[in-house]
Image (cartoon, rainbow, N blue to C red):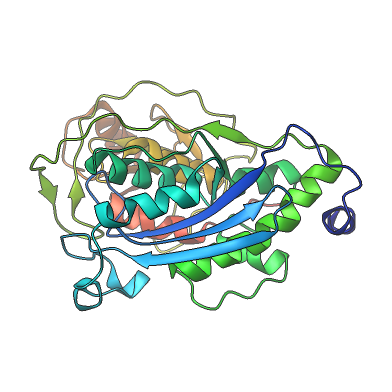
Length: 327
């Protein structure tokens, strides 16, 4: 399979006419992961229809608030003090995106952050479709140990120089997207394109915050429409054990408010190979809740069944290194 993909990526014989005519490979660094967090840097590599680089662009952005996890992105308040505001770079950013498919690693997150920034600026990003490179790698059946960008880079022999720097992450993504796109074209694979719906309004109202581990962030309402998710392909390896990593196939349930939007948190869990459970049973591997003393049905059942419980911040750390399922 790997040899076939490599050959296909280097010399596609035909090019599907239904494929997009251009792409904008994007990476944004942010103050956090929640609804009220802000973009602090952005990079765009514009690619033509066959994945060749046309140009690239990078900017820092003053978020008008604390920069969040400096230990991850390296951008301090001092470094961002003289940076332009988002509304000052919105037009140039839009020029880079206009008429192209937005490509990103975990594209739902990048798109949500971009859409919110444009809504704050009382504008819309000129993007109608997005493509997630995680979804594309799954369509191609790439033999990756996990779906981190560094694993995708290693698979294609792309050297990552500055992880979590928007410009370098976008470069790495562009260089891994090109062979992926060509392999898809050669095999006639349908690209996993999704619609981008812009926000039409935004209100910067004061929002309640919570502290303790992870990012201080927005606590949204607990009401959400139901979402049907694909069946987890991995068997349940059992319960989570404290001090050990999560393992693909584990059944994870969520209870109560989360600082990161619940849909995004669940998407990250699914992409890591976990099974997101809508209810709690004796088979549940782990319950994620920021209020372990509450009387919600899931928390009560977790006490009854002895189900392990962690908070959202700890779960976020565990998601960074999920063990692959037993082969």
